[in-house]
Image (cartoon, rainbow, N blue to C red):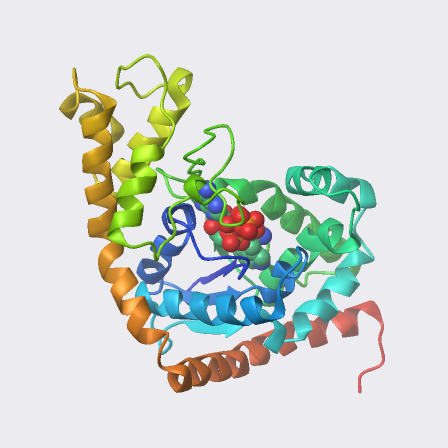
Length: 329
Ligand code: ATP
Ligand code: LTN
């Protein structure tokens, strides 16, 4: 039997955080041993928020370098930039014709993002339709993403089912795949909010490329609470989040960590947490800094990736056009 297809994407909307790493990126290289993996840099999604052109270019190449630094092998997986495969946008237009506006307005990410700006842009509303196209173009079986993407995956499944029942079997119905621990890492400054690379407060997140001193400083400044007790409980969200990060990097489970720090203060937990993060991120950061210098290699990877991705994307898109009644070229 053919290997299953895994598809995921990350937006070049900033420097990746340890939340992106734990919730998604970290699992990508392991998956390539068992599945046919396709990993994308979703630049068309990133422009739904204002981007400085020069910075967008840099972030796009940096994410590619990070994909490589965590161990994604371009010989095993397809690595490419979304805007290099225009079929994504073509399919998104077609899927828009079967998507309810009400359905899009109910997406929590849309509600959050539109509340924060005074003008609601159509791109933010349509964002999940483009994401559905990314996934459906490749007949994806599994989508490794963090918890925040659950609603978008449900919409993707819904659109695939709707299309299939209207025009006959065309798309595979994908499943979401979230990590057991760390599917939702919270902000270090506000444990009610998810850690986000586009947070204005740089102390709210640890970037994958922060240096050791910055990591120590940010962990030290992380908010805690006045209880002074180390417990893994929803009533102590900030500490719970620090324990989740600790667990993800150390491989220990939250109960073991609570036990190890029983009766100790937050200071020592934070100090050791910083070291655990440094141990986990340090080697990746160093590889990243080397890889990002090699512009020719990066170009080779994304060009070859786009060529491979286009082949599969075309195959699905031609089928979609035919089923909908368009005249073939
Ligand atoms: P932004 O903050 O710019 O809106 P983002 O970091 O939420 O972006 P992406 O870059 O597209 O969004 O996310 C890439 C992957 O990282 C997705 O699979 C997403 O679910 C996951 N992810 C993002 N934030 C977290 C988090 N705080 N905890 C766990 N996983 C996360
Ligand atoms: N919406 C996602 C990023 C994303 C994605 C995808 C993830 C765009 N297209 C396809 C998985 C598969 C986010 O905001 N994290």
